[in-house]
Length: 381
Image (cartoon, rainbow, N blue to C red):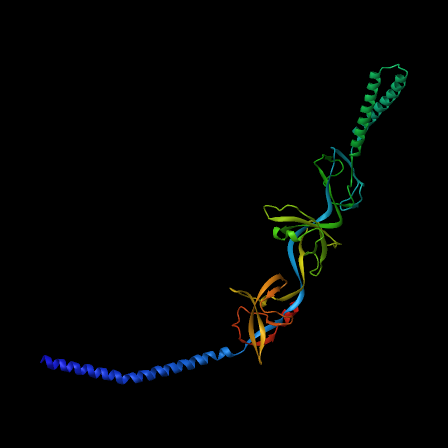
């Protein structure tokens, strides 16, 4: 019985194996068909990649490229001073109006000097007496009537009287407050009858014959600023197209540790009436000018792990294809970049992809459909 059961098991195993062998060609046919469908699908998906990629192109151009720096500055008068009295006293009279234009040496205010004039008259009497005494002793000394000690005493009294008279003359002159330079007097803070001291500010006087501007330059640019460097000033109080020219006349020799910047001052050439001391303005300084530089728009630069690249439009028979050119960049200014060097020589008027290089699906040899650069971008150029 065991022998019969073993025989039936071998027969079933043999039958199953024959069935598997018969099904194997069918499986091969199914796999081949699937592979064929896969190849058709891949070729169908690869077909759109062969289509031309529309791109906006422009040309490599040579132009003068200027490196500029824009900072904020504060406008100041050519000269500015706070008028103060050198001696204390009561204001007798004010000789100027607020906002009046005055000249150097003009008397603006008078302090009561009655007491000083009395002292001056007293000192003047002593001076005259000392002068007569000295002259008398001079004659007596020649005749040996007085001693040398008496003559020396008379000479000393004369010198003292002279010095005292000079001192009171100076103090009397200080009772008159005069304009230190030509300028415009501001609002006054005193009136006749007020008592002023050397700490009292009478008024502000400003020389507006020319204007200055004070600004800070970061330390990394300070080596490019020197006396005579030109700049352009723009202010919100002026028309948007108005530009005021200026020239640097002072560069500080130290760097501020707190701001890491250096103080720079400049003079404005023929400033308009709209500019006033105390206003702030934008100062644009020309740091460097590259003559006849090879330039491209900033949007045409492709930044990658291999460095900066340009995508040039190259002729390939009847097609236009993409050529990736590694480049070394230089100065950037007003939306343009200087091309210092490139592995493939770039000629002027060479067509390059001008915009969207980071978002377009491009690769070396890709077919391109060049389009002119947009009109507004050309206008900006």
